Length: 151
Image 1 (spheres, rainbow, N blue to C red):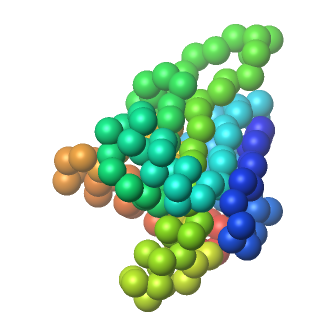
Image 2: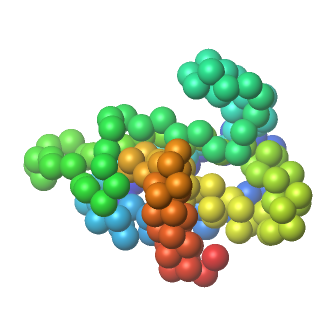
């Protein structure tokens, strides 16, 4: 799996574990070995800028996903195996925001970062949580995937 991970912020984060989580999500969702995803760890200010500029949101948030093309949950797009790798998109995570949220919820920072990584990639794959039934499907899948990596 091609997980490109860039840490562009100051908080200490176990990037090896995040990469393993990302690879698990891709593999367990049935994506080919040459699938590529980019994860960028950014500051609160940077994620707030992306949130405003691309999604019309206000202020920082925990995770943003930017898919290359719309995908359907559970469906791997057709591609030519001899062609270029399947690039599904970019995930931005703000660890300092995640740390504050984890503290407020009384969960570990590492567990919340694991969740945000899986959550962001599932969004790239077409999962959503706008409707209650969609949220149930996405949350169930997150729990299954995180259990596979001991989270």
